Length: 603
Image (cartoon, rainbow, N blue to C red):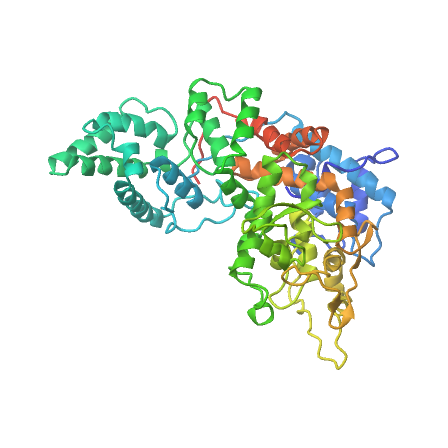
């Protein structure tokens, strides 16, 4: 559903919208030559759009692709006959209206919740808060793949494999062995001494994130008593019963109902862990559907230290910076004197702490495009060539940026610039692709097969990267996508692989000029950010969709995009404030939805 960002914010045409027949004519005239059943260039066949009028409902995703490419002038490819700007607006306005009408015809209809287990990070955080221990009990669990809107908390991918059972057994044993030795942890579940029922009556509701049901405590008490009969000590028997609790589907899976489900959704969204005592209390009092209560809870939760995990999990997957130091490693032969473990850690956490600061301080979301501040330690300021803040600041703190810093916003952060580069050189292609994917939500299609790699320069007179890419784009198979990606990336060429400012490439002055498919021109990162600021509605809608998918822990449906409409409208009306985005997501129908008869689909 990424293309919805382009679709639902389109300007209205200045003249009457065309009817369906005219839309079909445009597709036949300019699109079908490449996107027909036989060719299906880029894996896209637009023939199904020429069927019945209900294709706006049955083929919404395909219509979104068509509208996105026509609207941003990336299709037809440069050099091929294309519709006039007026015809593009007419087509996209008409199609956008029909797609939206089809999706929202019956109001917002959230799907029934799916059965989903805690992912590895959520498991570790939940065990930590449940037992008051300070180790990562889930470190040996299998890694979780991304699903939904690109996050590893998505229900679509959180199935239970055979290896999980053994690993959960080991993880529970590790956690309880550690907790047994820690006096602070023992007090959580080994008191009152001699009263196993009292311990379990206090522990089960916290572990299951809802009140214990009739007979549940008795079942685990029976395990305690069986262990005592085998000669186990009181502590051994309690831990035996608690280990069984930690192996229960009611702990490992999100099975909460009613207001306890809202408490869990809220806590796993903003903390990545179980609800705390206050959320449990509010669920018990049925206060968690009150907008004023939820607004206060959001303000409390986003300033809690546990919100750091939310920032880290969301940002690293949204921006792709989780790969920094893993799959993405700048060439140590070229950058080792300047790029060590401390700098890598500093640049990796800069966007995370920046995001956390934007949310906690309720700053404008537009600061992600451009800002007059960022968060840095003294060491990172020196790395960026900036004058360090007076005093010893080893930890990153908010700092004001000088006007000539070339920083501000995501595009001035070394983590973003490094993950969109090769190990030994920058890549306007990767950087342009990153902006399209991660800021505008309009990713280019995958490259066609058998496209040659960008040749290195072996001439006596070295060619700049820009010159080599321009030659690469002469290949008709490459030009369509590269005409979208490369110009954006050129605007960031003043930054090297690790994000330092430079004025030359291959001994020649950096040429940072670029032009977007819609005709917008720029020269350098400051002007590129100004162009992106003109597209702020696109960025905010895409960010809202990503955060919405993360909060719902699943992929978004066409009906969810109707909720995104309402969320974005409220955010715009409030000056793009960050907490307004979080609040409107939490208050949305899909987030608060509870089916009258829960239907849980197993993966």
